[in-house]
Image (tube, rainbow, N blue to C red; front, side):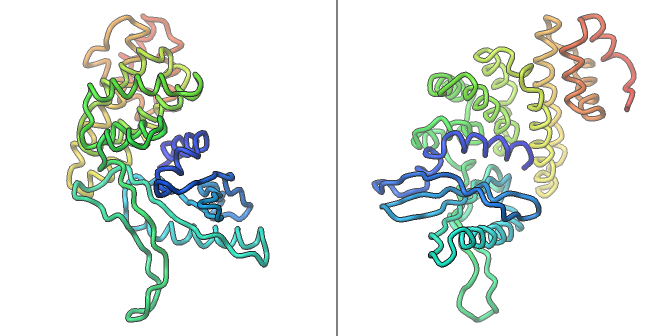
Length: 321
């Protein structure tokens, strides 16, 4: 999932207790001991998605995988990861039993029909008893805003744009709750950024991204200026959305959604610089330049060029580097 995965993992590292509480049965005391930080690697990827816990005073390990969709390769990836994680834990404490491991796939988009609550990767011969791995499926995009809010943390509020019942009015409340619940200005900006990334995925076709950009900028003015990578994150999320759309035969709709996402993000920045919304032609030029040159170069131009120079630049033919 590229930068979306990085964003969510970063937030989870800020609030590991809030992440864990959603997956430990209510009434069971839990203590977070820290993240697994092993040198065992899997294709140069560190085993940094697993938490050491103590549940009911017993050692446990929780592995959380953020997935754009529950694709066919997800069970393979989780099985592979658990193997490396088990080996790492065993090497760190030779002769000691490896703590029980629970895996959870947090799914951000996919089919409308309910996903199963459990996934598996079977490796046994046909006709033989099961061997392999089972894992939980937490399809956050199929939850309601009320269900996400009930988890009791701003960490889970960033998934609100994915909810089945997300509306502009509901997201206005979510933005206010994040403003009140963030531990610092830095965390608040990170939560808002994650909120925008989730909105760009738009699994239900709510098309609330543009409204959310305005809400966030009203609360956190200059966020886009301070976070130039956000454009890249949104394009990555929408690119994944295109792939999903192709599988469902909806590529044209996904492409229109991507154009709206890019235009809303960079068009908002244009409006702050020029004092008006871009024309249809200017908006089209912004999208085309973001695709051809990359969002970073377009954002640089929106921030660095004065009004007349910016308008001329958008009217010129695109010069690809």
